[in-house]
Image 1 (spheres, rainbow, N blue to C red):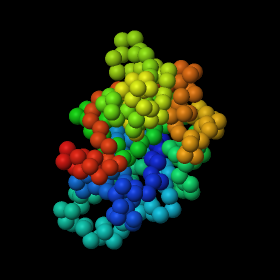
Image 2 (tube, rainbow, N blue to C red):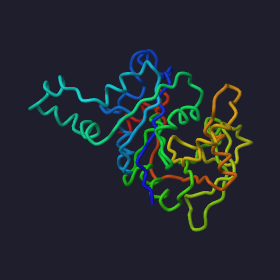
Image 3 (spheres, rainbow, N blue to C red):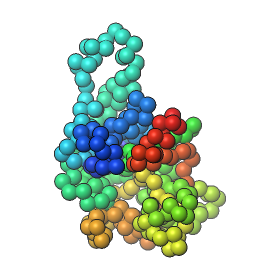
Image 4 (tube, rainbow, N blue to C red):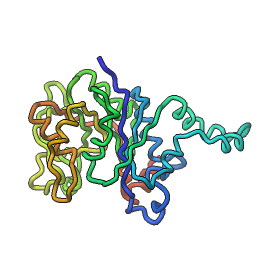
Length: 272
């Protein structure tokens, strides 16, 4: 049975809600305490056994490439000091993992960003993490929870979901589905709607930025039509696979905070 080994990190956005700092600093490098969001995402993936990463970024976000490289001058400067401990986790990532980079020239939605990494993925399942979603759990983190499920349900895409207030469902992709027998937190998806009005939402279960996708997603994305904003939505592709019984939704264990806004970013720092 194949285990997850690869993860796509879509990080091409300009982070305009964090201007002016994101004029030159990628939002994904903004820190929760001293550790940037992108590092939390990589460490979460590593817990699930993932070691190969591809970042889908834009041409202005070279700092993300530099972050996952050795820094000889810095290493010499702090060698023999207690500051070495501050970069131990990052150096372990650089030593154990490989990173590739793909430029998304036009930001045409999450579906398009994932499709850009098609050549990086062989005929296997893979993870997708949106670093905006800061996630924590006292036990296994979300991708590890989902990876364990993926082994039990091969050939299925899995999306992480959480309950949200009805006033907020219009901010998310929302699923409709049937609980699997004996599983209070796992649903066979039969409907997905991107940012529905509250009265049209099939449930209050909103998709967050954690996915495990099968290679089938790429052929499906090729057939998806752009939405009214010209974007390719991953929700539309998953909806087509759901019609074939190939999508599960998992109500994860843990806490998730949306760091895509300044308020959420501050909340995550206070939480930690």
